[in-house]
Length: 327
Ligand code: TXA
Ligand code: MG
Image (cartoon, rainbow, N blue to C red):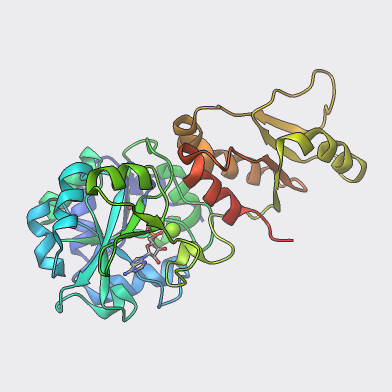
């Protein structure tokens, strides 16, 4: 159900009073919108899991306003964390550190580690500063569904369950933060994002590996995630036209998201969207595109594979793979 329009606000004070009352408040970040709640309020934390329909053993990350707050939430913070914070915060990087004993087990699903990040959005940084503490913030969508990159997307998924939606416009990055694990022997990447393994390796001066397939506790690494309700299939560029012809034999209306333009005069009944070949531009609109095509209630969404072997596309390729329907 959609939120009442008056819940969508640009007013930080409205959002703050909602949070202080123990209500949920969606907030904008540069990556995707977060489903915020007071990270010190266990009742509010439970509401987050309930609203999303998320299993209790899938940990939440905590958003903070500044590096000074890091030691309120984590212990044994390694030098690498401070180096990364200096280079990438505020920004799309979540660090997994050993949790401070005071952090609620409800946030971490009983794990001894905690994800933390300073998001790069002026409204939310101001909100966090004035709030003075941390906010838990999973992506503000129903569990398994496409992440939200506008206030309207949040409203469509979680409308009535929220005290307020702080509207900070469309997210500029468009896919979730890179997650780096810093609580073990060697840093490793659990979820790819706008900050690449190469950039992190360069800053740390070591070769940081990507392990996102192996980590079961990262909910984004489960089979179906970021997914539209309409069956979505990844198609290799060389197979695209052949697949469209095959589908036309069975279905009148379906969607195609492709780098190629719609062949002139052909495929009149196909909802064809030509997308940008720049990975940053692509990432910014990928979730909005999936939501738009999903609303058409067509038979399927055929989406052209992105260049898998190119590091600049790696995080997008990862999301599309997880969002696509498994055969
Ligand atoms: O960009 C983002 O990170 C967004 C914005 C709102 O900040 N948030 C976000 O949260 O994507 P969420 O909950 O949708 O994804 C966070 C991921 C989950 O897959 C969760 O399982 C994983 O981080 N995670 C959280 N704490 C963890 C931990 N201690 N160890 C391993 N994975 C963890
Ligand atoms: Mg999520």
